[in-house]
Image (cartoon, rainbow, N blue to C red; front, side, top):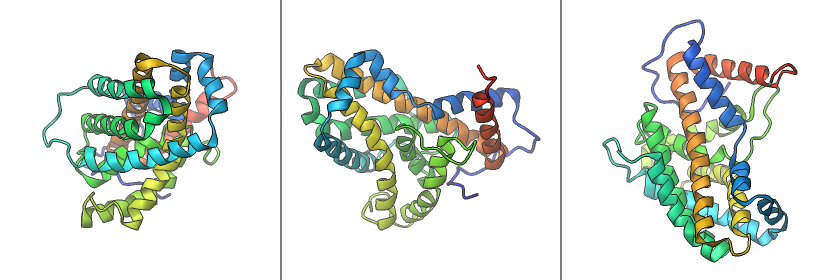
Length: 283
């Protein structure tokens, strides 16, 4: 099976199976990754309005969301990953959530018109938060493979496509991106992150955008609710940030376990946990 780039496996342990504690970590990560929660978060904020707004967002708005997502990811790649401090940050995920909420206040006041300006700002803030989570899970955000894995998180939140039987959407997305990440990592090592026009990086970002834009459209639908106000706009962006922080935590927990036990063992256990969760007798 093709695998994506992992952090150096210097902590690899040789054991027959995951420890009970690590199995619990993997189970919780699987539940987060297989059941993205942004629609539920937004529904809790806006009730039935989010569903109604989603039905009536015109195609032009969806197209605008796609364009905004493309610009946002390119901006985030340049501004967030390249400029991360070398030392560990004392900023918490809550701090980044608060910053994202502040940027979302404009979306609440000006609605969809603010999306092209606001989304790159909030996405950059969220990506910095994701990089902090990666560091907490033992990775170096300045390593090109880790940097691209941070960006990969934005492909995980738009509802997972079905993989092979028992595979799970998360593993399917990672498999779909694996070759692009490997190629993009080589380009970054040779030319640096600034060369975003390289075809390999363009293709990789395009794959992320195709999934990220699904979530952006959900966010846009929420902001399309008439006169939601600055406070609601801030709350929408806070939910947006918390959504990706939860995915990032789960994603980098899986990667940490892969470094400890090997990718195949962890992914096989991930598949087994999915089968247990979806069995007819499961709660």
